[in-house]
Image 1 (cartoon, rainbow, N blue to C red):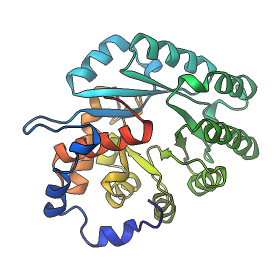
Image 2 (image 1 turned 45 degrees about the horizontal axis):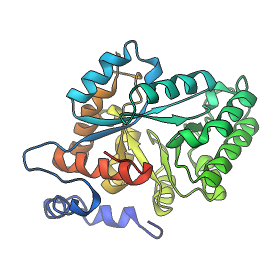
Image 3 (image 1 turned 135 degrees about the horizontal axis):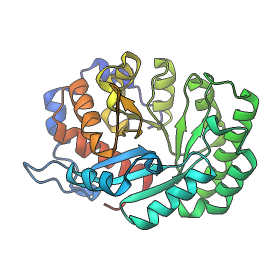
Length: 283
């Protein structure tokens, strides 16, 4: 979406009823056929599946909740191996993204980058990766590792799932310099000027259950176009003191629908289409 102005369109009341009704009829050409009275399938675009206490039970509850696919993100070589195993066990449902989280530097720098280079062909995205300026990990090291991962993503045409806490502008700058085409800024809660720029570049953000109460996250979700938003849980992160799991994607769905003044069916349909397009999913 180069040249897109989210602020201008938001000012026009982009998510009024007329617009919403028009969007409800537009998806037949994209591989998702919506049936009246049936909630469209959902995609949890970011979950740390290997950290759940009982993955089998969590997967069962997610399916019951209408979650059609879960993107399991890795953080270091150990979690990547677990994600790899889960994606094979639940083939076509749990989809692997391999990453190297800034929190796991410098311990896993060499081994982590090696794993990504050797296994990039087996994942649908590289993530969770990025920068975090709220932790005591050398920023130059974080940037150097992130740039190597972005280069790998560019060469292999992989989307990137980005952690950018406290380093939103710097992370976007690195992505732009890398020429990576597809990126999702997970749980975005940064400055609105950075949001505007990333949207202008065609990148997207993801909404967690925190969109129900976090001021900064709510502001980002409210102002970003629905067609630039994915849903996620970031399981097993706690919301309101309770650990999350993919079935609670319904909380993300509800929060986004309320912020947009749109029906949950519309939000489900559009965010799933966004995930399908970004990650080349086959649901």
